Length: 616
Ligand code: GDP
Image 1: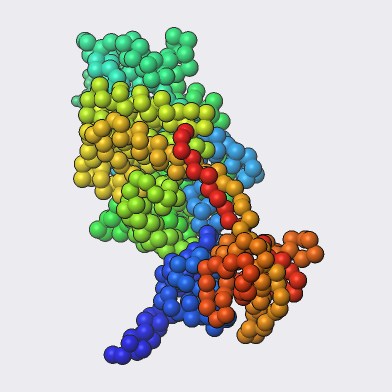
Image 2 (image 1 turned 90 degrees about the vertical axis):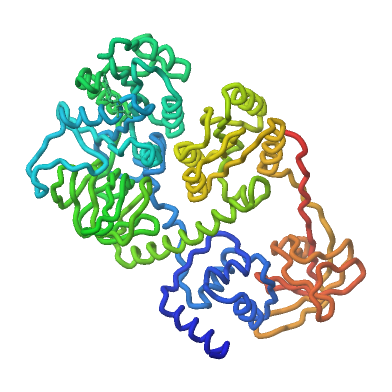
């Protein structure tokens, strides 16, 4: 087959694909070509025919790139619609409240969603089972009255409802539980009274803090002979949880999950805290929420448990979960019963999706079929882009700008770090030097620190908190490594403390916005206008001072007034493209986005000088 035939076939195959694209930032020609599934030369040729010379590495501004995409027959959609995705689920309490107040008009109180956290073997599973057994109504259903686990269940107490997230508590599911915190309004921290505060207890506290959710402490196993509940409360005070009964503001309840003691009191505490949170939702809008659990069922296909956080989910709705979507075929509640709709704070199984989403993903309903299809396609495209982006970011390593853009670890000059070290002594030393790097301008925030290797839970915490992981004589196991790659979490390993501070300093300096200064590089006067092509022009100019620089910021002055500002796109000496032209020489100048140059106009070019920061 000839090259031409082959290309024609490729093009025909492309015709079959939906031509939808979103462009939300300046893009280089090469990347635009990839996005539009075209060859770079096709774009360059297309622009050349329009009188514009571009190179593969040239950056096109957003509007211009959108124009090019349209010229190639693409529908350009606003990414704002994609960004909106899961907005509600990603927000903390405060954020949700604000969004509620400004966006929804039919707000009503909703039930709280609770998850149980704590160290392994402290009794999380037993507590979940005991609460379920003692309170959960078993109703007759199509499933034959068997209460099946869908990853969450509801209990009713005093006319109120509480939703418990019930993700299995074993290692493989830690990440899911960690993610569950985003769906959670209140965390129950289980601490065994005979064992006290342990590493995962601290991890859970830090996680709840990162997600800004209130904690209720359940001191468990009080039936045991060596139980010492007060010791637990003393230990927790070191981590910022001071018991209400001692004048602090953390509710603590003594329970025995095994003997079902104190469960009512625990539920009362949950209701008390939920009342204070004033949780609200609007049942009248299309649903949005978060996926708690999902798997591929041999018989039913993809099955996902969703927690509706706002709005009402109905059979027949179009559900969008990033790159996964589908029309809801059936909804099944936590009693195994088929239901027609699920309102706010309801966990429900969804059938009818076209793939298996990830636990922790946000979902939302898009009523309009056409919009839904477009957004699903955009979601699939975005996922592909992200996969490429993440591997690029990982490859970029620790320093370098590409990582900064993808890493997101920085917010208002706050740098989030998660520290793991081999021994308690080295951990303290590392944390100490890092904390001493905090200054007025830079805040180093250690979201969690512990001894041992990096676990999946660490990676999930780092991902939730947008943190970089610092590993001192500690490594990530294969699963954690894989998860870090998936989540785009950077892990940096060290053996010398000095190298940590050195790297962090470099990294921090690189991410602070550089101080810049604009310096005038030269001026030129327009002497003559030449027409090229149908609508293009080139201005024949004389450089009167300094030099003209291609791609530099230019300002066009007419009669002392600024009439255009933008990059100097094209600079020529006779027929050749050149990078610069010095004083006293003639040159040809044209702009991609301004074609109204006139004789006598003055073109000034500026360079931006970055004043390098050398210290914090
Ligand atoms: P998880 O790893 O936190 O989910 O802990 P489990 O619920 O699996 O409990 C670990 C062990 O502690 C099991 O053997 C439970 O029977 C036991 N256990 C849980 N709660 C209690 C309790 O209140 N009292 C006593 N004596 N044992 C408990």
